[in-house]
Length: 100
Image 1 (spheres, rainbow, N blue to C red):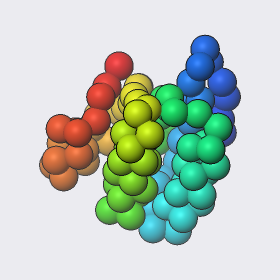
Image 2: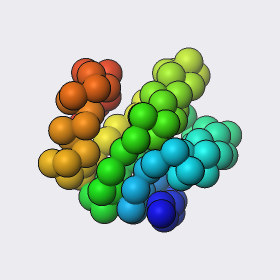
Image 3: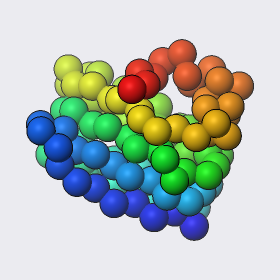
Image 4: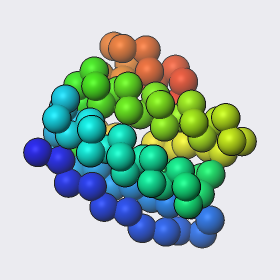
């Protein structure tokens, strides 16, 4: 199960992901990412409470990054756990993300 909340900070929208970003949750995450894209071109993903990311979740994050880049925006990732960072590194997605 995935819990998604958002807040605003400066000119960015912060998206907090809590739980597991699996196949089922990726649909909901993608929908939230699309809504956020209509509001801003600066997004921060806070992954402090994210436990797991499946390939569908990685695709949703990559799609968010691509769409932000297309409109001249930015995606920052913060507070990624060791487990999630391991997944990002093993899949190569860590190379295209910016971490703070």
